[in-house]
Amino acid sequence: MSLRALICSSLSSLCVLLGATTSLSSLSFDFETSMGPRVDRVNWTIGCPWVDTLSELTWKHMRILELDLRAHLGLTQNWSLEAIAAGGLIFSGIGRDCDYLQDGRQMEFSHSSASVHGCVTDLSLCAWRCYPYFQPADSPPARCRFSIGYGLSAHAQLMCDFNCFQESRGYFVEDGEEVHIDGSVDFKRIHELMEKGCPYVQESMHSPFCYDIAAIYLATWTSFFSGARLEIALPPNCWLEGELQFHTGLYTGAGDWLLREDISDFVHLAPMMGGVIEGRFGYKLSEGTSLLVGVTARLFRSEDGKAYVYNYEEYLGESYFNRARWSSVAATLGLRHLF
Image (cartoon, rainbow, N blue to C red; front, side):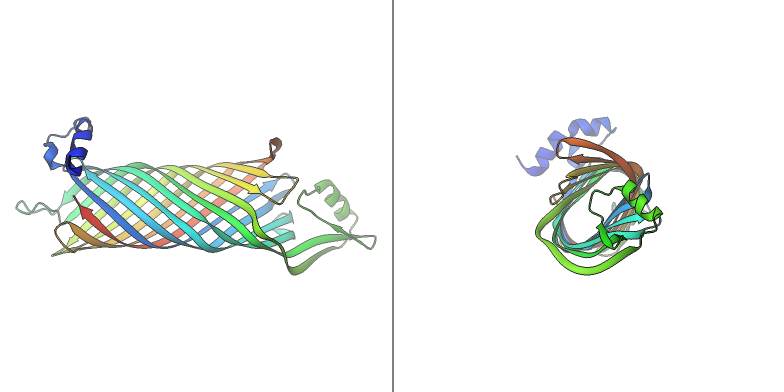
Protein backbone atom coordinates (compact mmCIF):
# COMPACT_ATOMS: atom_id res chain seq x y z
CA MET A 1 0.00 0.00 0.00
CA SER A 2 1.35 3.41 -0.95
CA LEU A 3 1.91 6.15 1.62
CA ARG A 4 -0.90 8.25 0.16
CA ALA A 5 -3.35 5.36 0.29
CA LEU A 6 -2.39 4.55 3.88
CA ILE A 7 -2.95 8.14 5.00
CA CYS A 8 -6.27 8.36 3.18
CA SER A 9 -7.66 5.19 4.73
CA SER A 10 -6.49 5.91 8.28
CA LEU A 11 -7.94 9.44 8.37
CA SER A 12 -11.23 8.98 6.58
CA SER A 13 -13.21 9.06 9.83
CA LEU A 14 -11.55 12.34 10.83
CA CYS A 15 -12.62 13.90 7.55
CA VAL A 16 -16.22 12.96 8.34
CA LEU A 17 -15.99 14.52 11.81
CA LEU A 18 -14.70 17.76 10.30
CA GLY A 19 -17.59 17.89 7.88
CA ALA A 20 -15.64 16.94 4.79
CA THR A 21 -17.76 16.70 1.68
CA THR A 22 -14.97 16.01 -0.77
CA SER A 23 -13.62 12.59 -1.66
CA LEU A 24 -10.62 11.04 0.02
CA SER A 25 -8.60 11.55 -3.12
CA SER A 26 -8.58 15.28 -2.34
CA LEU A 27 -6.34 14.71 0.68
CA SER A 28 -2.89 16.24 0.42
CA PHE A 29 0.25 15.46 2.40
CA ASP A 30 3.64 17.13 2.52
CA PHE A 31 6.69 16.56 4.68
CA GLU A 32 9.47 19.01 5.56
CA THR A 33 13.01 18.49 6.80
CA SER A 34 15.16 21.44 7.80
CA MET A 35 18.24 22.20 9.85
CA GLY A 36 19.96 25.26 11.17
CA PRO A 37 21.54 27.15 14.07
CA ARG A 38 19.66 28.37 17.12
CA VAL A 39 20.60 30.50 20.15
CA ASP A 40 18.75 30.16 23.48
CA ARG A 41 18.73 31.94 26.82
CA VAL A 42 17.03 30.59 29.98
CA ASN A 43 16.82 32.41 33.31
CA TRP A 44 15.01 31.82 36.61
CA THR A 45 15.00 33.28 40.12
CA ILE A 46 13.68 32.13 43.50
CA GLY A 47 13.13 34.00 46.75
CA CYS A 48 12.30 33.31 50.39
CA PRO A 49 10.63 35.17 53.29
CA TRP A 50 13.89 37.00 54.09
CA VAL A 51 15.00 38.17 50.64
CA ASP A 52 13.15 38.77 47.36
CA THR A 53 15.86 37.17 45.18
CA LEU A 54 17.81 34.47 46.94
CA SER A 55 19.17 32.67 43.88
CA GLU A 56 19.33 33.47 40.17
CA LEU A 57 20.49 31.07 37.48
CA THR A 58 21.10 32.09 33.88
CA TRP A 59 22.16 30.05 30.84
CA LYS A 60 23.04 32.33 27.94
CA HIS A 61 24.67 32.19 24.51
CA MET A 62 23.57 28.56 24.17
CA ARG A 63 24.48 27.64 20.60
CA ILE A 64 22.37 24.84 19.22
CA LEU A 65 22.28 22.83 16.00
CA GLU A 66 18.65 21.86 15.41
CA LEU A 67 16.85 19.39 13.14
CA ASP A 68 13.21 20.23 12.36
CA LEU A 69 10.64 17.76 10.97
CA ARG A 70 7.15 18.85 9.91
CA ALA A 71 4.20 16.98 8.46
CA HIS A 72 1.19 18.77 6.99
CA LEU A 73 -2.01 16.93 6.12
CA GLY A 74 -4.73 18.66 4.14
CA LEU A 75 -8.06 17.10 5.16
CA THR A 76 -10.40 19.30 3.16
CA GLN A 77 -10.09 22.43 1.08
CA ASN A 78 -10.05 24.54 4.25
CA TRP A 79 -9.02 22.23 7.13
CA SER A 80 -5.57 20.78 7.78
CA LEU A 81 -3.43 19.22 10.51
CA GLU A 82 0.20 20.05 11.18
CA ALA A 83 2.66 18.14 13.40
CA ILE A 84 6.14 19.40 14.27
CA ALA A 85 8.99 17.54 15.97
CA ALA A 86 12.35 19.23 16.46
CA GLY A 87 15.47 18.42 18.42
CA GLY A 88 18.93 19.83 18.79
CA LEU A 89 22.22 19.65 20.67
CA ILE A 90 23.63 22.44 22.83
CA PHE A 91 27.30 22.39 21.92
CA SER A 92 28.37 25.55 23.80
CA GLY A 93 26.98 28.01 26.33
CA ILE A 94 27.64 29.90 29.55
CA GLY A 95 25.95 29.22 32.88
CA ARG A 96 25.88 31.66 35.80
CA ASP A 97 24.70 31.07 39.38
CA CYS A 98 24.32 34.06 41.75
CA ASP A 99 23.07 34.12 45.37
CA TYR A 100 22.11 37.19 47.42
CA LEU A 101 21.48 38.15 51.04
CA GLN A 102 19.54 41.41 50.59
CA ASP A 103 16.60 42.57 48.50
CA GLY A 104 17.31 44.03 45.08
CA ARG A 105 20.17 41.59 44.38
CA GLN A 106 22.42 43.16 47.02
CA MET A 107 25.16 41.48 49.07
CA GLU A 108 26.03 38.79 46.56
CA PHE A 109 27.60 35.97 48.59
CA SER A 110 28.26 33.51 45.77
CA HIS A 111 28.88 33.84 42.05
CA SER A 112 29.93 30.88 39.93
CA SER A 113 30.17 30.23 36.19
CA ALA A 114 30.15 27.07 34.09
CA SER A 115 30.21 25.74 30.56
CA VAL A 116 26.94 24.31 29.25
CA HIS A 117 26.12 21.31 27.10
CA GLY A 118 22.76 19.60 26.65
CA CYS A 119 19.84 19.18 24.27
CA VAL A 120 16.50 20.74 23.33
CA THR A 121 13.18 19.28 22.13
CA ASP A 122 10.11 20.91 20.59
CA LEU A 123 6.79 19.20 19.80
CA SER A 124 3.49 20.60 18.57
CA LEU A 125 0.22 19.52 16.99
CA CYS A 126 -2.16 22.05 15.47
CA ALA A 127 -5.39 22.16 13.45
CA TRP A 128 -5.64 25.00 10.89
CA ARG A 129 -8.68 26.61 9.28
CA CYS A 130 -7.81 28.34 6.00
CA TYR A 131 -9.54 31.35 4.44
CA PRO A 132 -8.34 31.86 0.83
CA TYR A 133 -8.40 35.31 -0.73
CA PHE A 134 -7.78 36.67 -4.22
CA GLN A 135 -8.30 33.23 -5.71
CA PRO A 136 -9.06 33.29 -9.45
CA ALA A 137 -11.73 30.82 -10.51
CA ASP A 138 -9.47 29.18 -13.09
CA SER A 139 -6.38 29.05 -10.80
CA PRO A 140 -6.85 26.88 -7.67
CA PRO A 141 -3.79 28.00 -5.65
CA ALA A 142 -4.84 31.12 -3.76
CA ARG A 143 -2.58 34.15 -4.10
CA CYS A 144 -3.21 34.99 -0.45
CA ARG A 145 -4.36 32.62 2.32
CA PHE A 146 -5.09 33.48 5.93
CA SER A 147 -5.34 30.66 8.50
CA ILE A 148 -6.32 30.40 12.15
CA GLY A 149 -5.05 27.46 14.19
CA TYR A 150 -5.36 25.88 17.63
CA GLY A 151 -2.99 23.35 19.07
CA LEU A 152 -0.80 21.92 21.82
CA SER A 153 2.95 22.28 22.21
CA ALA A 154 5.79 21.23 24.50
CA HIS A 155 9.29 22.69 24.60
CA ALA A 156 12.14 21.45 26.79
CA GLN A 157 15.75 22.43 27.45
CA LEU A 158 18.14 20.06 29.25
CA MET A 159 21.26 21.87 30.45
CA CYS A 160 24.34 20.30 32.05
CA ASP A 161 26.87 22.53 33.83
CA PHE A 162 30.53 21.51 33.89
CA ASN A 163 33.96 23.19 34.09
CA CYS A 164 32.67 25.27 37.02
CA PHE A 165 34.56 28.24 38.46
CA GLN A 166 33.90 30.24 41.61
CA GLU A 167 34.02 33.88 40.49
CA SER A 168 33.34 35.55 43.85
CA ARG A 169 32.22 34.81 47.39
CA GLY A 170 31.16 36.87 50.36
CA TYR A 171 31.86 36.62 54.08
CA PHE A 172 31.47 38.56 57.30
CA VAL A 173 34.29 39.51 59.63
CA GLU A 174 33.44 38.87 63.30
CA ASP A 175 36.01 39.63 65.96
CA GLY A 176 38.76 39.49 63.37
CA GLU A 177 37.69 36.09 61.98
CA GLU A 178 36.07 35.32 58.65
CA VAL A 179 32.54 33.88 58.77
CA HIS A 180 31.85 32.30 55.39
CA ILE A 181 28.39 31.62 53.97
CA ASP A 182 27.90 28.16 52.52
CA GLY A 183 25.09 26.79 50.38
CA SER A 184 22.71 26.21 53.31
CA VAL A 185 22.11 29.83 54.24
CA ASP A 186 21.38 30.40 57.97
CA PHE A 187 19.51 33.70 57.84
CA LYS A 188 19.14 33.86 61.61
CA ARG A 189 22.92 33.82 61.94
CA ILE A 190 23.28 36.34 59.12
CA HIS A 191 20.85 38.74 60.82
CA GLU A 192 22.86 38.46 64.03
CA LEU A 193 26.04 39.40 62.20
CA MET A 194 24.34 42.30 60.42
CA GLU A 195 22.84 43.64 63.68
CA LYS A 196 26.27 43.52 65.29
CA GLY A 197 27.58 45.66 62.44
CA CYS A 198 30.08 43.08 61.26
CA PRO A 199 31.73 44.22 58.01
CA TYR A 200 30.81 42.28 54.87
CA VAL A 201 33.52 41.50 52.32
CA GLN A 202 33.01 40.32 48.74
CA GLU A 203 36.08 38.60 47.37
CA SER A 204 36.71 38.20 43.63
CA MET A 205 38.41 35.07 42.37
CA HIS A 206 38.52 32.63 39.48
CA SER A 207 38.90 29.30 41.19
CA PRO A 208 37.88 25.99 39.56
CA PHE A 209 35.91 23.60 41.75
CA CYS A 210 34.54 21.00 39.32
CA TYR A 211 35.59 19.83 35.85
CA ASP A 212 32.93 17.14 35.55
CA ILE A 213 29.16 17.71 35.47
CA ALA A 214 28.18 19.68 38.58
CA ALA A 215 24.46 20.20 37.99
CA ILE A 216 21.66 19.20 35.62
CA TYR A 217 18.63 21.37 34.87
CA LEU A 218 15.47 20.64 32.87
CA ALA A 219 13.04 23.40 31.86
CA THR A 220 9.73 22.38 30.24
CA TRP A 221 7.07 24.68 28.76
CA THR A 222 3.77 22.92 28.00
CA SER A 223 1.01 25.02 26.49
CA PHE A 224 -2.17 25.41 24.49
CA PHE A 225 -1.78 27.94 21.70
CA SER A 226 -3.75 29.82 19.10
CA GLY A 227 -2.13 31.12 15.96
CA ALA A 228 -2.60 33.12 12.79
CA ARG A 229 -0.76 32.44 9.52
CA LEU A 230 -0.58 34.43 6.30
CA GLU A 231 0.68 32.91 3.04
CA ILE A 232 1.32 35.08 0.00
CA ALA A 233 2.14 33.67 -3.42
CA LEU A 234 4.87 35.39 -5.44
CA PRO A 235 4.51 34.16 -9.02
CA PRO A 236 5.82 32.18 -10.65
CA ASN A 237 7.64 29.94 -8.15
CA CYS A 238 7.97 31.67 -4.77
CA TRP A 239 5.86 32.39 -1.70
CA LEU A 240 6.11 33.97 1.75
CA GLU A 241 4.70 32.70 5.05
CA GLY A 242 4.30 34.62 8.30
CA GLU A 243 2.97 33.13 11.53
CA LEU A 244 2.16 34.48 15.00
CA GLN A 245 1.28 32.28 18.00
CA PHE A 246 0.14 33.06 21.54
CA HIS A 247 0.79 30.38 24.21
CA THR A 248 -0.56 29.84 27.71
CA GLY A 249 0.09 26.84 29.94
CA LEU A 250 2.43 25.44 32.60
CA TYR A 251 6.15 25.84 33.25
CA THR A 252 7.97 23.08 35.15
CA GLY A 253 11.60 23.18 36.15
CA ALA A 254 13.69 20.47 37.78
CA GLY A 255 17.29 20.39 38.87
CA ASP A 256 19.88 18.09 40.40
CA TRP A 257 22.82 19.58 42.29
CA LEU A 258 25.38 16.80 42.19
CA LEU A 259 27.96 18.42 44.49
CA ARG A 260 25.75 19.60 47.35
CA GLU A 261 25.04 17.51 50.44
CA ASP A 262 22.33 19.69 52.01
CA ILE A 263 20.06 20.04 48.93
CA SER A 264 20.02 17.57 46.05
CA ASP A 265 16.92 18.36 43.96
CA PHE A 266 14.30 21.00 43.32
CA VAL A 267 11.07 21.30 41.34
CA HIS A 268 9.43 24.49 40.02
CA LEU A 269 5.77 24.82 39.01
CA ALA A 270 4.24 28.03 37.65
CA PRO A 271 1.78 29.29 35.02
CA MET A 272 3.37 30.54 31.80
CA MET A 273 2.58 32.53 28.71
CA GLY A 274 4.53 33.43 25.62
CA GLY A 275 4.64 34.07 21.92
CA VAL A 276 6.21 32.72 18.74
CA ILE A 277 6.91 34.62 15.52
CA GLU A 278 7.97 32.78 12.38
CA GLY A 279 8.73 33.86 8.84
CA ARG A 280 9.57 31.63 5.88
CA PHE A 281 10.42 32.00 2.22
CA GLY A 282 9.72 29.18 -0.24
CA TYR A 283 10.99 28.49 -3.74
CA LYS A 284 9.54 25.74 -5.92
CA LEU A 285 12.37 23.61 -7.31
CA SER A 286 10.20 21.04 -9.07
CA GLU A 287 6.63 19.79 -9.14
CA GLY A 288 6.93 18.04 -5.79
CA THR A 289 9.89 19.70 -4.06
CA SER A 290 10.41 23.19 -2.64
CA LEU A 291 13.28 24.95 -0.92
CA LEU A 292 12.49 26.68 2.40
CA VAL A 293 14.37 29.34 4.39
CA GLY A 294 12.95 30.27 7.79
CA VAL A 295 13.52 32.35 10.92
CA THR A 296 11.76 31.68 14.24
CA ALA A 297 11.77 33.76 17.45
CA ARG A 298 10.28 32.62 20.78
CA LEU A 299 9.75 34.45 24.07
CA PHE A 300 8.15 32.63 27.01
CA ARG A 301 7.68 33.89 30.58
CA SER A 302 6.51 32.35 33.85
CA GLU A 303 5.78 34.03 37.20
CA ASP A 304 4.39 33.52 40.70
CA GLY A 305 4.81 29.81 41.24
CA LYS A 306 6.17 27.37 43.79
CA ALA A 307 9.65 25.95 44.31
CA TYR A 308 9.92 22.62 46.15
CA VAL A 309 13.26 21.54 47.60
CA TYR A 310 14.43 18.00 48.37
CA ASN A 311 17.47 16.24 49.72
CA TYR A 312 17.26 12.94 47.90
CA GLU A 313 14.01 11.38 49.20
CA GLU A 314 13.52 13.90 52.01
CA TYR A 315 11.21 16.86 51.40
CA LEU A 316 12.79 20.00 52.88
CA GLY A 317 10.08 22.57 52.13
CA GLU A 318 9.20 25.21 49.57
CA SER A 319 10.31 28.70 48.64
CA TYR A 320 9.00 31.45 46.39
CA PHE A 321 9.40 30.98 42.67
CA ASN A 322 9.72 34.47 41.21
CA ARG A 323 9.96 34.02 37.47
CA ALA A 324 11.47 32.14 34.55
CA ARG A 325 12.20 33.38 31.05
CA TRP A 326 13.13 31.63 27.83
CA SER A 327 14.10 33.38 24.63
CA SER A 328 15.19 31.70 21.41
CA VAL A 329 16.11 32.67 17.85
CA ALA A 330 16.58 30.06 15.12
CA ALA A 331 17.30 30.02 11.37
CA THR A 332 16.60 27.00 9.19
CA LEU A 333 17.19 25.78 5.65
CA GLY A 334 15.21 22.82 4.37
CA LEU A 335 13.12 21.03 1.77
CA ARG A 336 9.39 20.40 1.45
CA HIS A 337 8.27 17.21 -0.31
CA LEU A 338 4.73 16.89 -1.62
CA PHE A 339 3.33 13.33 -1.78
